[in-house]
Length: 316
Image (cartoon, rainbow, N blue to C red; front, top):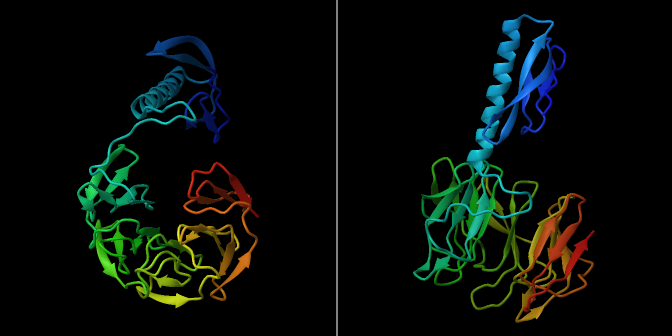
């Protein structure tokens, strides 16, 4: 392991450490005999062209930081790249719930269903500790709801199933750890999408209503007023579809199903006009798939359908 010190005012990089930089005065250090700390080899350094005590001090600082980095690696249990490792378990077993990354780095897990029935409970995952802790419960037990992080840091929970298809919505405030009711949707929905737009509003589209099958209708949630208002309808009624915000501010709606008929069609929502227009169709009809915006601006569509599919397609 080599340690090279820069000139005055520059940073010193310790190779092999996790981006460990040390600001130093003018020193030129070279490696002499390495020593062992646990399983790591730590070089002893000697200064030249400087007073001896300064060299000793510099050496002590670097050794301390190296030892600290070893402790961090040991305590965090960093796994090999490209592998999964176990972490803490949720406080409540649940399925068909939501998981939303908050601005503070924690993840909000909300609602869902288990052997007890529909759940109103929620919990937070802390990546630093790898543990889940309960937080405030939703005002309504629900599953299959949508959960959308708003620009103000709050989370909009909307619709879902709670004994019947729900139109109600609520907000989670990470600052207080509580849920409060907000305005209800104009239409009860399940298996719909909810997409945050660049203007801060949320586009809610499609899904199944109360005994009506898939809907073509869409609506907008305004965090400033806490209300939903109707917007233009989709060209095709659909549920189990995806809705992806594109780099140009439009939303790509793709696939889905109606009465067990799966679609390859897609359409675009334009927030400037409040309308949907058809765009190119997918090569394969599918529903309950995924759609992910790539760094290239293209959208990766994968899987889905009544039967498991391995097909993937890109929209550009």
